[in-house]
Length: 519
Image 1 (cartoon, one colour):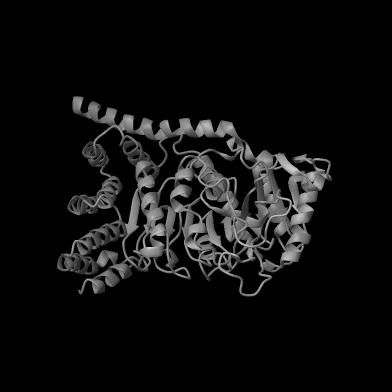
Image 2: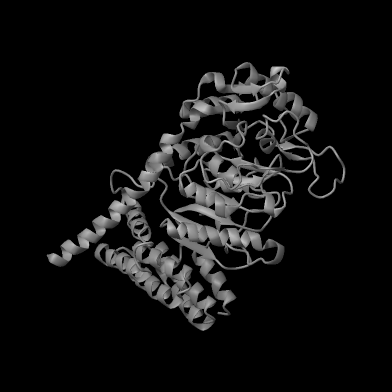
């Protein structure tokens, strides 16, 4: 009885950590700002469905009707610089001034020409139908003097009287560790997000999923797909590596792919809530496989120069396909951005897990304004506004909370103690999943023998064929990394001879890995 009581105290302590500690900081964030009161929604009346989406979003977020604005624009993806100025920029500047959303230091000039000293609007939500590209005016401009841009990035500097059209502008909010209301260096800065994608239904789902995740918490796994790049591309690898450390600190189970190519087709990635990778032109590999689906509320991004150049196409490049697969938010570039001027994943993920909104996190992680970036998703969405809950929830959620609670003790407990806590909990609960999470942590730390042992134990408790295939694949991959191809091949052949897994999509990944190890 004493042993049971001691174990329950451990479980209770982990649950209290998972359910209460994170919410203290997020409650503090919630008191800082109610951004729906400072948001303007812009739609294109000429584009079928744009107005209905704008009203749906405003209703869901309780944005006042006078802040839902229709502006006639081309119904194409792109617009000229003249069209942008005449149909979006100048009309919005006039509306902001007329409604007194800006406080201006006019210095005797007309109101529309004064400098913005305070703004009652901090967020601009662009709806599907508003063009997302400003086309190039000049032919063959010098590098970093291009005059094309994303509509969204140009509107971040709406308050500037005459922003330059060539090259990027330094983002004063880049690297900021505070939420926007506490940031005083750029009073007119707008955080621009876009609710857009391949269809109206997808946009509605993105809106609803963001609200669902805020209410119920976003619990699941992270996936990082390295590309093993170096030299001028090392920066991107560093962002991904730093993101992995952030996920680890916050108790999010993580799978890292350490291949030059994208994650192989049909590789199993259940409950994915965070995906970050690079570098192929079009969606491919595991996340493009027919059976893959993100968990509701997921945030995903794949770096590529033109990832968002056709964001309304369900199959081309990356942003559209990621949304088709269920992501609630993604990020991209509408023209060539140069790597260093894109969203920095390390900063983005740090801010998201600190409770920032999607728009705050993305723009505080992007060095350049008036450039190529777009933030696709509800700009007010806070994926980690609620990391726990008032009840333990389903078994799946409970395992994530238990693991999160133990991992968040890492500053206090030695690594071995954390793993002992989790494995003890797993034994008590007969939880294959908790053992799997701990095995993934050991793999992340380079402790492959330990990880293989934990994953083997997890497989023995696995409740479904899909779980058994996944755990066997993870073990075989670790043997491959350790230059033990024969051991990996033996595991895979044994798996493929099992009649109970013949219908599992991940069986194709096992066949592919077996070919790679020479089986």
